[in-house]
Image (cartoon, rainbow, N blue to C red):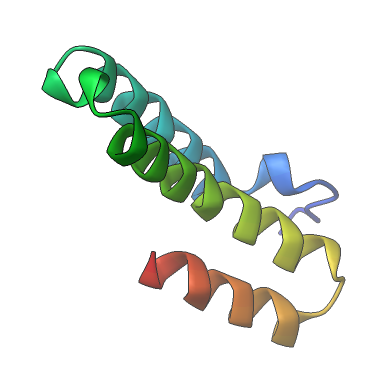
Length: 75
């Protein structure tokens, strides 16, 4: 099993990034584009999933990573 050295190598982070891209595209192609507050909240929360995965990984322990993955899951 290969050692993961950067959070960008995590499949779950890559999946979250792809989802974030899809959400951004969807928001920019619908009426949500006109509702700035809602649009910003949706985009912020989708980016927060990637942020939590990255932060948990950078903490360096399995317990912290598990906690932050759980937070990302709840978002």
